[in-house]
Length: 61
Image: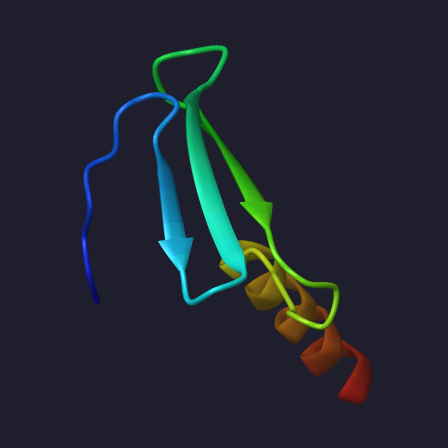
């Protein structure tokens, strides 16, 4: 895993067609992450995937 420290408004470029911009959020504990990527690139929050996986497990029982 690569850890980067970005300043407010800085942008990270991944490959040729994905960019990530970081902005200060509305409080000290939050940031805004804007992702610009082609439609065919799947982008999900890990926390949302864990919740969905737990719900899917409950439905199987």
